[in-house]
Figure: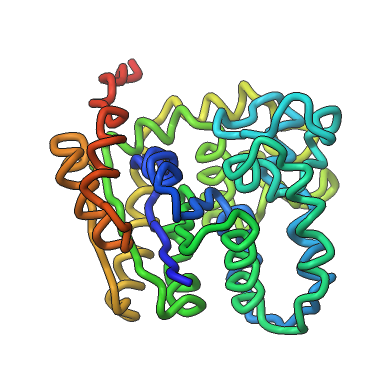
Amino acid sequence: MERAIIISNGRSGSTLLSDLIVEEPETCSVQEYFMSVAPWNRSTEVITGPAYWDILSGPKEELSVLFKIGAPPKEIRYPAHGRFAGDLESLPRILAVALPALTDDPDALFDSLAERVKQFPTQSAGAHHQAFLDLLAEATGKKRRVERSGGSSQITTSLLENFPTAKIVYLTRDWTTTAKSMSKHSSFQIVQLRLESIARYGVDPLTAAAGDDVPAEVAQYLPGRLTAESLRRRGDNPKLFLGLCAFMSSQAEQALADHPPAHLLKMAYEQLVADPVGELTTLGEFLGFAEPAKWAVSVADRVRKPEPMAVAA
């Protein structure tokens, strides 16, 4: 099985790459898996197969909050007719994006995976991840799999340690442009909120209780108080997200320096936009596609120069 991981800060064109890669007939393009299990994916805990399935089939905390306040990210792909459509706060994390990106019937795939995952042996989290992603490729009849999660740069160390033989694509984008895009995106608004609150006050607003002793700056974001509008207002200051970009990039670059992968391809979003056929051909060759140039030509027209974003007054 050929394995690869695309690492990026998010808002850098990684979703586009996943949507293009899925057009290669022998490749399983897995989206938003690793970040859907964060921060648990950093764990070295040894757990059973049933315990692992309990994690995958449970909701992601941040996403449940965003559904509750009516601010889910547009990347959610779970169908409106799906089994969990009436209770999205309880949506299993792998049904938000990962499975719907692979099939038109994600509920059926979810059901078919359940018993097989529960039979996984007791092993480390990293070994479970490896086995689960291989199972996805097998279930979809593919010979390779490429995982991509927006914001995965912050967990690069974990990815490199748990997947030492994987091919690594490191996708970057200008920080200023990325920060502006993050500032308008609810998932990154809540990530920035949590990281800043923990760093400054030692309090995670998503897990703190109303009766806890928390500073006033954090109290407005506690469960039951956070609103879509208060979260949106954090996006009025793109500088907050410039700091987030710097933090995430430093995590990735330090990890790549400390644990150099055997196979590394660095890509810049700006170069992808300027020369989509050339950059995609290089990517296809790196990933081992049978006909990388043919694939690149067939999908290159979907790479478009982004519209300029308005600057907040």
